[in-house]
Length: 252
Image (cartoon, rainbow, N blue to C red):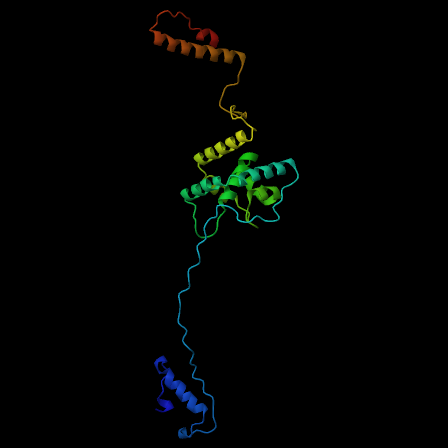
């Protein structure tokens, strides 16, 4: 078969290569002059393979390795955060509860790696302990080295307020109750707090109430007493109770 009879299809690659060798070796039967190099443009076929899908990343429960730059300030607030961090390190079972809440709330477990459950819990404690808004919490996490050290944020991560709101609000009330019970049991064991008294604090806020004065307080007291006496009179059937309604006089 002559070289002119050779096609260029891939099924005839062997014939093309054989013809190429004859031309390069100056085969006298071809009647050609000096040897020439002929490039038929044949390239080896590379089988196409489907690339493997990227490995799924899962949300971590805790930060595996802390940064050497996570240092707490010598200020009393920084040292308080350091002691709180040490207590959390001794009660890692709480991280599983937070991780379960994140899964139940619909936070994706695969794709881009999200905040570890440990960081979510620590950010929530920072927000509650320092009485911060989500915007203020995001600022302090970016600005304060002590806050970042306590939150155990991955290196160079700065969560936005929307991320903080979505993850922290996923923690259920039952989980907070368990955290409070664990904290109280730890305090009782260390003889720091017996857990027999509840301390409450209140804040004065604006409300739709009339301004308290002597006359208005007197009217409120008389009005409530009259209501209670009417209820008592209904219970005993109107027997043995004698009282007068002074609401008209108290209201003047």
